[in-house]
Length: 88
Image 1 (cartoon, helix red, strand yellow):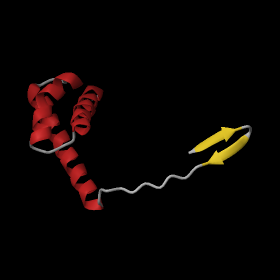
Image 2 (cartoon, one colour):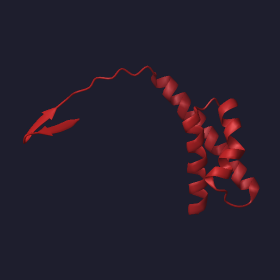
Image 3 (tube, one colour):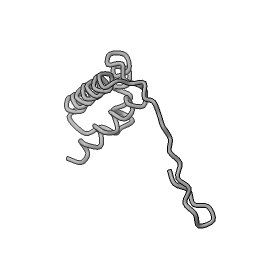
């Protein structure tokens, strides 16, 4: 982070400790990938691209309860998969 005051640069260093281990990050990435595969299957079985909102309504509960994805990641799955299908 860098701030400018009176034509002088002031640099601040922030040290953060992460609670997550490499294994937990890897597990989260794997669950996120599983979630995208699940959402992709829902879109494919529907036969046409779905809006992110519609896809979220169809997949959110499964992603939260079965894959234990955090709320924000569950919402991101729908947006990412929906956007990918629309781009095809």
